[in-house]
Image 1 (cartoon, rainbow, N blue to C red):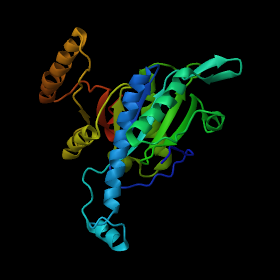
Image 2: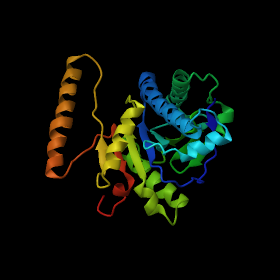
Image 3: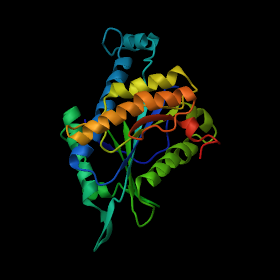
Image 4: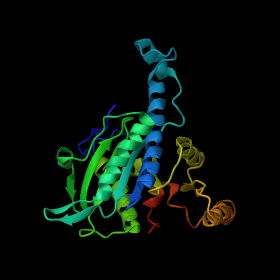
Length: 291
């Protein structure tokens, strides 16, 4: 398997399977932080591809015509989801004698992506940043964009922000990816049925250094499916480390999750879900009463 380059396309097939758009904002993280996040995404990509293959094989485990007919008769996997990844890379360019070119942090990101896919999927032949790959980068009003396909079939779009063309900082990146995913892209793909598509679309927000397992995402989606009135679900965050500051953070995060948010839930209004690991219902984010 290899990471494949994909042309930018809007031909997305509609289905009843929930779609989770994984949105990440990145800046100048260390290689360890980047690898931690990318390995988590690769694990989810692998997990979902294995479940997809299991659905397409008959009960006897053989991919024959009879097996395919038996597979169609089987109950659809209740945890089945579709995912795509949108990564917004802050300040991805620097000035050189040849003009604006990608900086060392984006090159580090590509190297970490190769390490992550190689570590999780044991794949050695990966896409590298070279002159051939640079021609695949599409120029955009905010900088650039390129699309990759992970070995499990997940599409990953990397948006390269140029701070000379668009506002920097994470908050503006969040506004950017929500508008791009929920209004611009879906509006062009589903011009007549966008409201129906938004009802089965979800945004999973991640920090650039978070580490998670596939079951954590599926567990949060279970909470979403239980009640259509639930607009957001957040996972419990565990800071890692061993210094006194981390100990305090672990206590603070536990109190915020088990006490503060539980009380806000009883009162009927949870004030905040952490952006490092939360799922939001797309139809709620584009509602008229949401600013």
